[in-house]
Image 1 (spheres, helix red, strand yellow):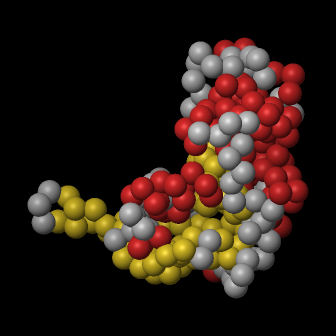
Image 2: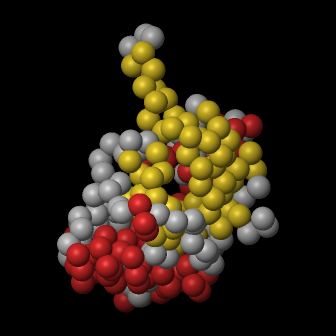
Length: 257
């Protein structure tokens, strides 16, 4: 379909341990994401979430299957082409913010544009900071900002490149509950207002319920795709931990949007 931004077809990933032993960590992943979707990727440690995110973000290559990104078969691209495509299509947000201590918020957000050789960096960085509500903090350094404000700077930095997809790895992991909900609301607004696709990793159902589609992984496989916020809310009410297997009755097809 024309609005598909990424399509993974039986994607596998294996690593060689020693000289002859091969360990497969992804076992035939099928995943389709459309523009403007808001997806939470869940699963326990070792389930393959990080490996999958690295492949989606063009940080790593699969050892099997096919991956089409914005209509491009990325398996046919060289390293330089992958790097350019990554810089053009993706924004990245991390749990630890990854801010440079000596740089102001404005300079942090300008940084990706410096690497791309963009000339109107300041104007675009100011616009991105305004979008995340930090116009009055643009000259502050990380030590002068709260955790939530630092994460907003990181989100602004991901936005400034005008990405099609934002990949966020545990973006609320270092935040308190209230600030976590504020950050997730910001992601939801970006999905609605800018038609950006957002994929984020989380272990927590109360964070995942902000998403409109939830994919759960276990042992390198997708075990559930299409859980919605109402199902998550029922699980929360029942006290079901986020890493526990879900009842088969709620397993469904991928939810649109």
